[in-house]
Length: 112
Length: 112
Image (tube, rainbow over all chains, first blue to last red; front, side, top):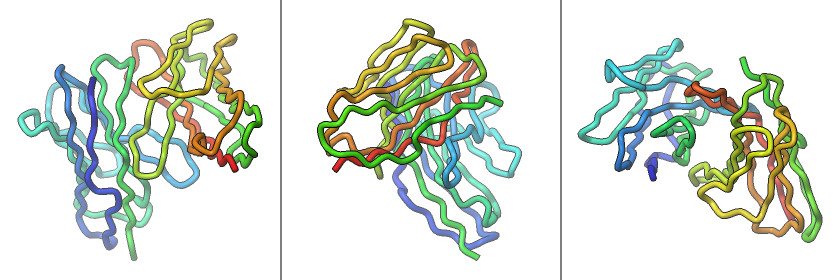
């Protein structure tokens, strides 16, 4: 089985500042990695994913995440956040696309 | 884009009542999932289905039951609600061969 740890339950940050949301995973097999975002009163939606190839993956709205196999991490970063990035972010892993294991989420609060 | 709906969005109910949480989708995806989300905790998979007449229990033990009579619907039932069932319930779907899950907005259940 796999598990995901998101150590930071809340991350407050000022607008235009950089941010990093941490994700570490545990698995005895190779996994695929995902970040989902949940805006208020909405369902989770896929932000970005690592399946294979380049370990650095990017989203269309400026987020990026780097797969680090040796540290079993998949941290999410953005060099300059906007108010609209305020949301809860979930890291997830899956070995076969049939079952997904999600972390406990990190609430990003962007302040003006 | 996958459309997936959950009703009700919020429910407050007394102990001992029978309740059914509805999940419906319009995209014809075979795979459907129910997750339980408690504050500060990982999303836990409680039920899943890979198609009509297929249902399985997830990794987290749950007293709820599910059915999958039609592709579009995946209702979750609690025969006798208890305060320990208070939680947020998230429904998701996924197409075969694809790596992305689509989530409904969730049902927040409070049992008094």
